[in-house]
Image (cartoon, rainbow, N blue to C red; front, top):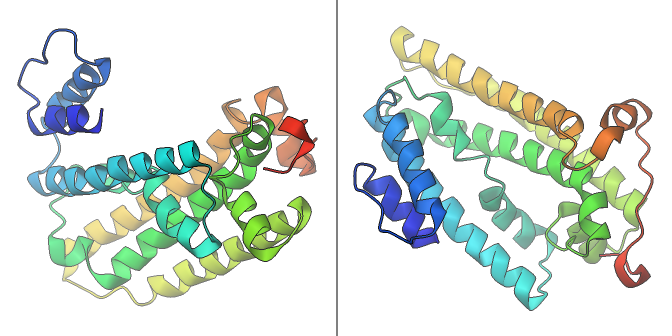
Length: 238
């Protein structure tokens, strides 16, 4: 499936073979539309990052199939790729010609990683209850914290919340380190970074409003911060 999607993205004007997995047609139509307005730099950056994302999802699938548990550090390294956050960043600058020396500058990359971590932590904290209830909680930061640090669910949630706060501080401090590339580029950099921040905030709100993880209880849980823990398979913490 990865090969099909990548082929479709690199050849958006090629008709997909009859009987192929539907992902090929979906990816081709998506990218055929995107290339009409996305800058060439945006297109290249997206393809580079999306390739990494797809292959990391294969690694996650293997982990799930084999029942593998990763250490917290190892989990985060993989989760930053599987979260699907990084491929969204080039889309934020679709109409911009943000050069490589800006997009891949260490300060900009670190700020993007901060936003990725914030989104991953938010997602994993909110999705943990549903995932552990269906026996699919191993690929989740809460499970990784519990496994690696020997904490219970509440302790792991508190650790994740503290880490979230530290990442926020790192992002805010990092903004002061953004270099100048001249007025014409600086205004694009600001627009791009503002977009990443709004992406993280929007994703957080969506997680409560979409019913994907919390059904209809999202708004209530957002206010009370209390989550009724669903029954777990074989009564084991996943």
